[in-house]
Length: 112
Length: 367
Image 1 (cartoon, rainbow over the protein chains, first blue to last red):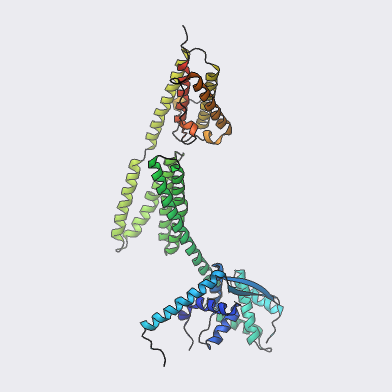
Image 2 (image 1 turned 120 degrees about the horizontal axis):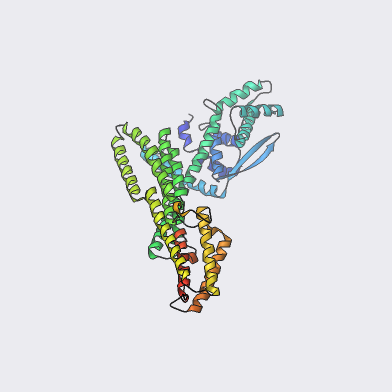
């Protein structure tokens, strides 16, 4: 089952930040592939959602970039800035709390 | 893994650009992304173009430039938060500085004027434009956007008119009339007609319109009409001319002035001539149809020669006062010397009074 884009939209920022925290620096395609592998294809980030978010996070100073030439084309690597690292903790903690609330709200029993 | 050629890279980049992706960063990101997919998934003997188009088609719903639009919208959203923060900071700053200015004004201490200029200036030139921009962004219809723009423009003009009036800067009345004009002629009709048509906004529109008309009415009731302004200036100019006549008559009955007194006289005449020339555009105005203003005199603040004359006059007056002793001394506590409130007519009258004092201190001439 692939999760709907509505579900993913609200968590995209947190996913990107968490991946960059674990992998130090990543480029766009790498992020999509890593998410696909880790979730066994259940979450598939679209290019139309990923790149606008990456650009916005960069403009906000949460991500920093470095570029490298791969033959004729340029590859942009993203990594967390100092405020980005703090925000990542905050986002994960917020999301954990959100999941707890949803679990309670929807009365979801933990799987035995 | 397929090895992509330079020609294919150019082809992809051109296609991305042709599809409306203008942000260079985004172009390079998408190029790298497509190239990665091709390298991983394309087979040597496949149709490159067909594979490319089917790959890039997965990126969007209707058109590729959706990605650019989404990027721009997220970047604007970021500015939105920054602007909102700046609006709140400037609003708090304006309110605080203006309040301090008002307190200082009532305590009659220095700094009141500077605080009020800063407070009203930041409120009308930073806070109000930011607030209007954010509200305009939030509004959907073009009529609502126009209303917000006109309202903000009028509010800025009203604030600036009050600031100009407080500081005796020229143009205060014109600014006030422009702001009321915008409100009455442009804002109110559009607001009233658009609001009254909808049942849910009808009552609110009527009440708000009445409040607006009453507010403008009170503002206009306080404001002096152009004719009344002219009459007041005419009366004050005539007072000044009568003082000049008194001085002329006094000089006829006084003996020759001493050296210090003569210097004071020459400097006062020079300053008066400079002010009158700056105000009327000529050294010898036709007084039958010339009126002087109550505004601050520009030449007293922006002319180094005139500032030199003021300093010299003050020094001569201090020497003169030491010579004549108490009871005959000239007034030194006048706005001209504190460089703070030097208005045209007041300064001219002060200078004539100094000359009158000097003339009256002389021994009357023998007939």
